[in-house]
Image 1 (tube, rainbow, N blue to C red):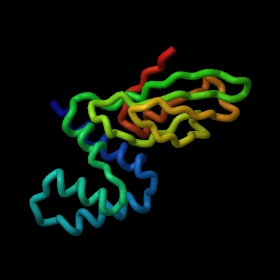
Image 2 (cartoon, helix red, strand yellow):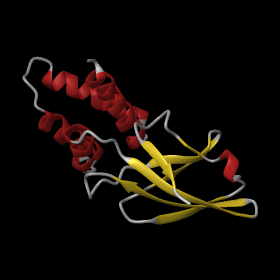
Image 3 (cartoon, rainbow, N blue to C red):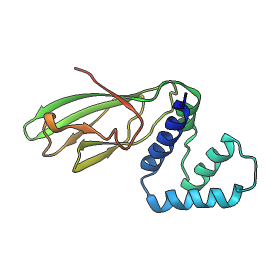
Image 4 (cartoon, rainbow, N blue to C red):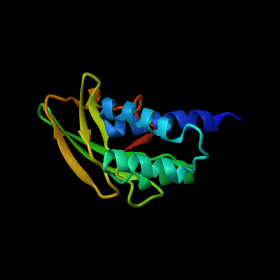
Length: 147
């Protein structure tokens, strides 16, 4: 099948939005290409290059996406509090240290959150439960709303 091609492009798309800096992202891709254009490259080379360019450890990100069949699941609970929406959230993953940021809220006003495997919470102003969305068009993840 061709699933691995789709997954590969989705993983890069997700990494781009996790980094959240298009100038850095496109510079990283150009620099990687220029450095390794006529070389044999291992996954480890790309991971180390990303970590060096971003000054952040993306090893758990790559471990989850490349070495486990399941994609991350953002589990969340919603509680409406007047005009505010309280969101509790965490990652459900195979890799305990996985801590990718993600965007939630309304499509026109996303808020960046930093889930881990532990429950966290945030309050979104002027947000209705019915309008709440996880930016799955930007991140290759599943979601699970818990009651």
